[in-house]
Image (cartoon, rainbow, N blue to C red; front, side, top):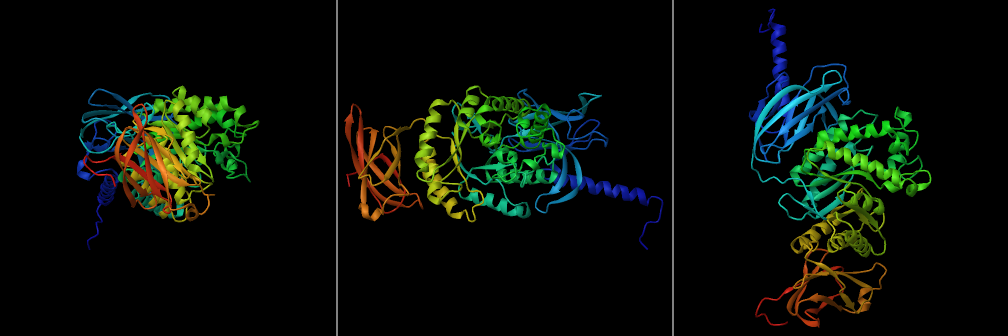
Length: 583
């Protein structure tokens, strides 16, 4: 009875489908639908008319269907010219997008083009969208304008000489974790682990584009929209949690033969078996087609994720010294350096937001690249079953003394994993050595809760002390009786901090007595309060007043008694309040 049998029925149905399509498109864009506007020009562009500073502005549009490959910039290149209120001109690459539900791992109906960026200044912006093809370069397709308003959102972490810093100038220390991959069959579990880490004080994650996890390029020059959707979701979660991400693009296992530790060379998209240009791993670094393919991958990564203020750094390669090359790594070091120079240079050309560039983990290679300004930090991967704290402090401080860039302990543990004590020791050792952060290897830990508790306590104790800042200097704080006890310490004239721990091979602590003495040198003469805190749970174990005795010239030494039965300890030495009697 209510059916429409008129000739207008097909037209009405088409109109209804258009309305539904527009509504679904609005839902996919950031912000409420009423905040959206449409640009001027041949191609309709949807965008937000008002965006907070460092918030996401996303342009959404479709181009006419055609035979051109959307992943081949030489055939079809789309970019936006963004003019900021101060007159800066940002060239922001666009990317082809297909909608996938990352949690359900299923395709949706929509596809099109996106431009993503975060405005770094408040005020009015002008944007022009250009499309280039082989026959028609730089054709203007749309123009639009929007307003950026002040906000409390944080901008990207930058390099400030040999430190990392937030836009406000405050030094940034990475209380990090290697949660490099998850299970694609249970993606929500990984997001839950991100939330748990953030709740425990983690502010930085290292994420791998591993082929079993985020296989962005499964075949040469083709990008998997399912993996891209998962990475979209990871960045969205990181932004909501205040997490920074080091995005590792390639890793040594992708080049190892079958039967090796990881052994994924046969599956590598650039292998000739899959239509790629590489006969062997060495070709990845030398073959022109392979290098150009990798640059196209970098361009897509920049177009889709460089907008995010959560992106701390691009990591070009994980542990490049482990790539199986004929005659070994050293014989190819100059060639590998040239590859880094080329790829880092390409990133700096196409990333409009100038994110930090890094690699890992051979120290001489990184040191040379850093001296030439190719990379922005040196990343250390350190493991030691006996004394990880001393190894981290010795190597980190030695590298930091020579380098003019930040030093980050990108991985650490006793072996291929890390204990709760190891988490504490690595973070404190890195901070006391002047590093810009430390990321324990928590990957595939069945239950990371005890490790995250240690990390939370470490942040609560280290953040107010900020011992990595240049006002502190390393000192040798002796312990008597030693009894296999070790200390890592810094002082700053009227303050001192020490981390005290016992080697794993040490004798039973109860057989060594109940207490020991720490001698803190290089502080000013005077009266101090010493607080002894357990790094296991952050509980204060004792407080005592001490008086420093003059040692030489204007400095003095304070002797601090501390208990032995509580495991690793954090000792804080600060001036006593005026008039407080010695206890």
